[in-house]
Every structure is written in C-alpha cells, then in structure tokens.
Amino acid sequence: MDGGTKVHWKAVRVGIDGAAGVASVFDRPRLAALQRWHSGAAAGASFFDAAGMLTSPHAVDWTDFPEFEALAALFEDELRRFQGVLQAEPPRSERASL
Image 1 (tube, rainbow, N blue to C red):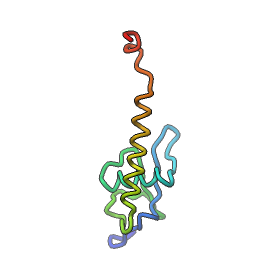
Image 2: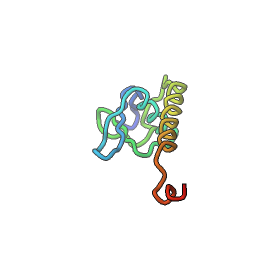
Image 3: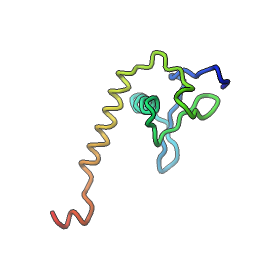
C-alpha cells in the first residue's frame, strides 16, 4: 500500500490473538474490534488487508463506518466479558472464607 492510498474499512480483516494462534472474527465481533482499534484500544487483535498487516487505523478509510452499530457490538462484547467475570469461580483462598 503506498502512502496516499487507504484501504476501506470493509476490506480490513480482523484476527484475535488466542491460545491456538490468530483466529479470524466476523460480523459483530469484527465491528467491536474495529471500533476498539479506531479509538486506539485494540490490544489482542491484528488487522490485515490484501497486502498484509495494518499497523495504524490511520491507514484505513473509515468512510461510512457504522459507528452506532459498532458501539452496540462493543457494548455487547464488554457485557459478555463482564458476565463471564461475574460467573467465574472465586479463587480458592476466597472460597475458604465463604
């Protein structure tokens, strides 16, 4: 990609780092990851176009990015993570005192 050409956000592929390597994500989780990246908080995710890895959200053309839908997807993802934390079993030392 040359310095003057930006890749459209629809062409950006998203990979989430996990125990088994990088897994591609689609649909609402993809929108949530793109929203995080666009706002500067995309730890644990990688972004690619046809030419390879993208290192900055400034290399992306965000024209017509569905911001409200992406924020809703981000909220759903954060809520799911929070529910997982609440449902997690407390550490053994805390269970002994319950």
